[in-house]
Image 1 (cartoon, helix red, strand yellow):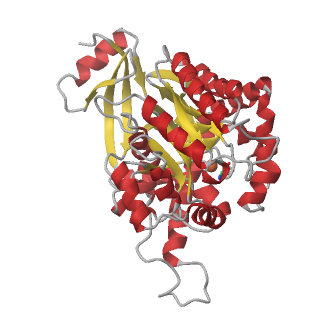
Image 2 (image 1 turned 180 degrees about the vertical axis):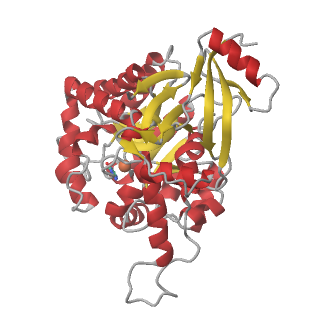
Length: 456
Ligand code: GUN
Ligand code: FE
């Protein structure tokens, strides 16, 4: 019965297949093959339930959760700057332009040193995996070799990684000590990087992928942006950038190009099914329509936005327009490597958008009506929304999907979640897990059917 099955997972699952709808699967069996793909999900009522448990036990391939443990799908971080990990929590009292020029660019310039890169990247990837992040889409730096170190860190730690060598060639908006040598070199380096990542990933089960990465419009020339658009087409590559993040950036693009970031990125050939744009706080209705029509996804970074964006992403409006949205930590615009923290902030920020924040304004004019995002919706953004953005079968436990799991223990010794037998329904339990879990509650992390992390 279990031919070609590597593992049988037995336990209860929380997931959300449709935006806003929570599903709880009680003590199911998840059958996973040697490629890490879910072959079958068996419910308790199924006639084969008991025989499968018996056979899996005999073959020593049963992974059985205890009473206090639950499976969640692995989280997907759609936007994170790996080189900024040493800067997490630093200088967040400054504005984005000051923060970039005084802290971030000097730090990122240090990644010309491959040994330094290797040390930081390995530490970051380990920290993310320990927080249940099974897939991440990373910005590295302008440096070819150290950006490849990030790919190697993902491979070595078993994490699925999407990695971009950053392009910044505009002499007007980048410091002398940190930019591409020329537009032409930036384009050639991007192609070489794509080829090298494909080579590195040839035998990597969980997958590593190159990403075309213009940092944002201000740091790139039009020529580079056009050139990158052509490269995207040639390789059918993933693309990432920042889009309409904050007032100064959004206004800079309008005055330089006479259009919004979205219109410009589309013109350069950088929007499409495999594009993930970070922030997007200033998207108007027309921009939302372009995102919808091109199949471009948004990486919502709510913690970072609280510091730098001057606005809250209108998640509800954009979802109504049909735009797909996932979540990003935006280390280190966001200080936290945890998507749990960002799930909470999605909800909190949306409530501030809906209610408004200035009590001097009457409550009828204070906020933007009908703007709230629920915690179950935020859970979708961290899982299925991320998988849809990457066009991979990720984010839910279902036949044909990739088996990425976190095991949550609500009775973990250093972090027992409050349980006084009052709030016992499953939705309350998930809410408690999402709001109160710490790193201590994450007992195991499985990526593509492989155990990559265990917290004993
Ligand atoms: N825009 C361009 N670069 C960055 C960055 O590193 N972080 C954020 N938050 N915004 C950016
Ligand atoms: Fe960012």
